[in-house]
Amino acid sequence: MEWREGNLGSWNLYFTLDGEGQVLLKDRTLKTEAGDLLLLPPKMERSYRVVEAARGWEFFWMHFKPTQIVRRQTDWFEQRKAGTYRVRDPGLRIRMAAILEELNEINLHRAGIPQRDRLMEVMTESVLLRIAGEQGLPRGALGSIDPRIAVVIDRIHRQIGAPHPLDELARNAGLSRSQFHLLFRASMGRSPQEYLEERRMELARFYLTTTALSVAEIAASVGYADPFYFTNRFRKRFAVSPRGLRSHQ
Image (cartoon, rainbow, N blue to C red):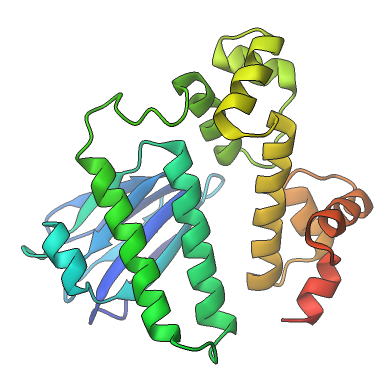
């Protein structure tokens, strides 16, 4: 469960979605968990470790060169030190994961898009600057999502394939069922069930385009025991079946 990095010529970015990873440096070990941005400078020898096989480590990663805009707006790159930065706002985590997922899609499948390199550069700037901006905020200043709802969102993201009955989520938030439902919709603009299905479908689409897992395996991994029901829900959301999506890759 350990491997060594081969490409040390560029900065590396890791954004952890779930699980836990460790980066072993010569003088210390860095830990990264869900919601952490990890930056590693060039020419720094390191290896990586997954701590718990059952929990795993799910992340987006990229090699990049910091732009002048990013260098002027942050102090992350001047001293060429490795560091982790916690994204505290669940809403920002969701947005950053969406941008990184789109970057992955452009990188793998859209080589001919006009101004592709500049587009990827600007999207990378957006991720770094948004997360850097949050680091300067005092705790409690985020305000975009009620902290009781944030607890539930974090639970959903960490256990996307698990059952999430409404009553159980409400208890997790310390609210009654009706209070929780109203507060969740006010914070997220949709019901808890709608939000959960959106996240499951987005993750399923990601697995379909980046892995060789079967449709049934992907369905089970995101919480659908019946692959036929999963296919129906997937088609309703994306206007294409899971197999149809793969055939167009």
